[in-house]
Length: 299
Ligand code: SIN
Image (cartoon, rainbow, N blue to C red; front, side, top):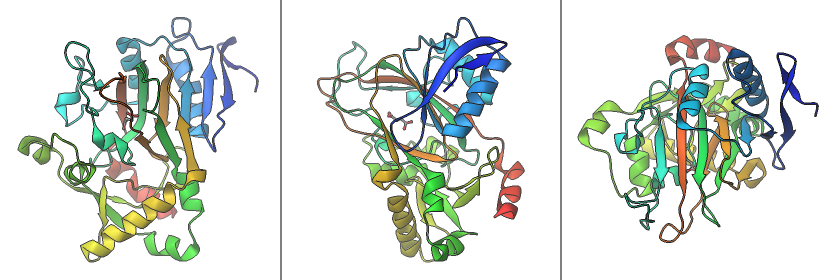
């Protein structure tokens, strides 16, 4: 592919990943390019490819916040124990204060398929994850394509779920994921269960995607066990091997993904002997009241 230009200058190279979707970006130097023009070409690439892998990028905390802000408001996560010095930074680390591996995964909730912030009224649009320390084996991140997941559903299932909502509940998904530290009463009050359509039209691409993952506890409007079984069945179909890109991390990778059309999850690693430290920012969608009526009308 020809290099992507910004203001007449070669900015970065982009090439498809080896998996079913996603693209790799090389050659970008944030000290040479910044501002609206850079953000626009990155956004266009993300909308086309759903997941972008930036290789060998020196990205400090301030630059990650600046890049994230171009896309919108940054989430300050309700699980405040993960927040960095800047409340918009979410730190994923298995190290203790002295930098030694603790033997525990920092967030078992990250190891089940999910889309960031679906447990919130205002959901996550774009996540950026930057690798500071990476284990020699494992600790990959998997991504599943929710456009194709929807496209591959049979017509009967599509009609059945067209106007359905699912109840997303962070407290419930943390209990199911076996997280050692459960939510405090205050955190539960700040993140009560919310409903979102199971099928959504992406506001920027106009493409239809499934919107579920394991934060979705059950489909509403039917007995809870039936609603849970429906969500489990759709999640299983949506994460079939042929829909997945596996990212094997290198230090200084930045991976950016579009939560409106992908699910993701982390894979295990040796938490007792290896280090895995990642810095995350999540940009929020506009308030859903502004978006959902148009989405539903389009179906
Ligand atoms: C996340 O769920 O946002 C983090 C995924 C990972 O740790 O690979």
